[in-house]
Image 1 (cartoon, helix red, strand yellow):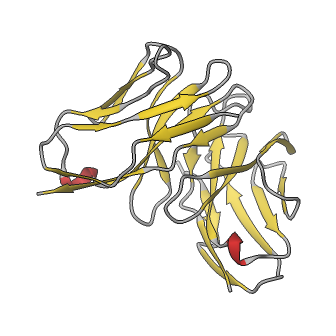
Image 2 (image 1 turned 120 degrees about the horizontal axis):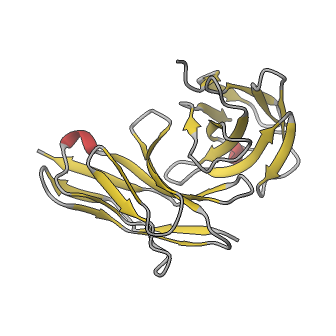
Length: 115
Length: 111
């Protein structure tokens, strides 16, 4: 049973560019959440997708956007990259009617470096 | 808003020592509480959970009890091993589908 898969694993971008990160949830899960984890800190909630709609959003600017597809996979897009966007981006899936009361299953993350 | 506060690390213990990592939270309503573990170069793994007051979550020798009166969810293990060396995150989840994490506590266990 495949867990959460994320691609790519590592990425280097230049300031001002745009980036797309991808996530496939664990089989049987229908909810995908995205987190940003800066070095030495806990994950910060970006947003959550359920039934192809953004359900909740954290304190991130509109440069961060996302999408969920009918097969429950998801993309995170970041426009106009800043040096401060350098972080590990984690995708997490859960599968109880769009809630995460049973806890997330996390992917291994995408390490984004902005230079 | 919701928040989670963990004891600051790093924590260094000898093998077979007793472990406690403190976690307190602030939340409206009745959140679920979790401990996640992150090994070097990997994503977070769910370690244990508790969904209501007085519940005890346990897994791999780790335990934590949901204490509503003290708003705490301290992680304990009676005898740690070198393989337990990792970063531990306390987290809560509200009914609306959003999780809030603490900043993590780094545990190093020496042989």
